[in-house]
Image (cartoon, rainbow, N blue to C red):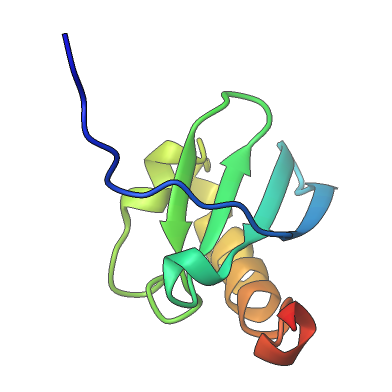
Length: 97
Protein backbone atom coordinates (compact mmCIF):
# COMPACT_ATOMS: atom_id res chain seq x y z
CA UNK A 1 0.00 0.00 0.00
CA UNK A 2 1.37 3.42 -0.89
CA UNK A 3 0.36 7.05 -0.63
CA UNK A 4 1.49 10.40 -1.98
CA UNK A 5 1.85 13.50 0.16
CA UNK A 6 -0.28 16.37 -1.07
CA UNK A 7 1.39 18.67 1.42
CA UNK A 8 3.27 18.35 4.67
CA UNK A 9 4.08 21.64 6.29
CA UNK A 10 4.62 23.00 9.77
CA UNK A 11 4.06 26.52 11.01
CA UNK A 12 3.38 28.49 14.13
CA UNK A 13 -0.33 29.22 14.36
CA UNK A 14 -2.28 31.77 16.36
CA UNK A 15 -5.00 30.38 18.59
CA UNK A 16 -7.71 31.68 20.89
CA UNK A 17 -10.10 29.83 23.17
CA UNK A 18 -13.43 31.44 24.04
CA UNK A 19 -16.32 30.36 26.25
CA UNK A 20 -19.49 32.42 26.45
CA UNK A 21 -23.14 32.02 27.31
CA UNK A 22 -26.37 33.31 25.87
CA UNK A 23 -29.66 33.29 27.77
CA UNK A 24 -30.05 29.52 27.44
CA UNK A 25 -26.86 28.04 26.01
CA UNK A 26 -23.11 27.84 26.45
CA UNK A 27 -20.54 27.83 23.64
CA UNK A 28 -16.90 26.79 23.96
CA UNK A 29 -14.87 27.53 20.85
CA UNK A 30 -11.30 27.24 19.71
CA UNK A 31 -10.27 29.65 16.94
CA UNK A 32 -7.10 28.97 14.96
CA UNK A 33 -5.52 30.92 12.13
CA UNK A 34 -2.99 29.55 9.69
CA UNK A 35 -1.57 31.06 6.53
CA UNK A 36 -2.29 27.72 4.92
CA UNK A 37 -6.04 28.41 4.77
CA UNK A 38 -5.96 31.66 2.75
CA UNK A 39 -7.35 33.96 5.42
CA UNK A 40 -9.91 31.56 6.82
CA UNK A 41 -9.98 30.55 10.45
CA UNK A 42 -10.40 27.04 11.74
CA UNK A 43 -13.22 27.21 14.31
CA UNK A 44 -13.70 24.21 16.59
CA UNK A 45 -16.64 23.56 18.89
CA UNK A 46 -15.05 22.12 22.01
CA UNK A 47 -18.42 20.67 23.02
CA UNK A 48 -19.05 18.45 20.00
CA UNK A 49 -15.52 18.43 18.52
CA UNK A 50 -16.76 19.49 15.07
CA UNK A 51 -15.11 22.25 13.12
CA UNK A 52 -15.49 24.65 10.21
CA UNK A 53 -13.05 26.54 8.08
CA UNK A 54 -14.55 30.00 7.71
CA UNK A 55 -13.87 33.71 7.31
CA UNK A 56 -15.92 36.62 8.62
CA UNK A 57 -17.18 37.16 5.05
CA UNK A 58 -18.47 33.57 4.86
CA UNK A 59 -20.73 33.88 7.92
CA UNK A 60 -23.63 35.46 6.02
CA UNK A 61 -23.35 33.34 2.88
CA UNK A 62 -22.59 29.85 4.14
CA UNK A 63 -24.78 28.67 6.99
CA UNK A 64 -23.12 25.25 7.34
CA UNK A 65 -21.27 26.55 10.39
CA UNK A 66 -24.51 26.72 12.37
CA UNK A 67 -25.00 22.94 12.48
CA UNK A 68 -21.29 22.12 12.73
CA UNK A 69 -20.82 24.37 15.75
CA UNK A 70 -24.16 23.22 17.26
CA UNK A 71 -25.55 26.74 17.44
CA UNK A 72 -29.14 26.80 18.67
CA UNK A 73 -31.66 28.61 16.45
CA UNK A 74 -32.32 31.31 19.05
CA UNK A 75 -28.57 32.09 19.21
CA UNK A 76 -27.69 32.28 15.51
CA UNK A 77 -27.76 36.08 15.40
CA UNK A 78 -25.64 36.41 18.57
CA UNK A 79 -23.03 33.82 17.54
CA UNK A 80 -22.99 35.16 13.97
CA UNK A 81 -22.28 38.67 15.25
CA UNK A 82 -19.56 37.36 17.57
CA UNK A 83 -17.85 35.40 14.78
CA UNK A 84 -18.03 38.27 12.27
CA UNK A 85 -16.39 40.62 14.74
CA UNK A 86 -13.91 38.09 16.10
CA UNK A 87 -12.76 36.57 12.82
CA UNK A 88 -12.30 39.93 11.13
CA UNK A 89 -10.23 41.39 13.96
CA UNK A 90 -8.74 38.31 15.60
CA UNK A 91 -5.65 38.00 13.46
CA UNK A 92 -3.78 40.40 11.26
CA UNK A 93 -1.50 39.04 8.53
CA UNK A 94 1.50 40.84 10.02
CA UNK A 95 0.95 38.92 13.31
CA UNK A 96 2.12 35.80 11.50
CA UNK A 97 5.52 37.14 10.44
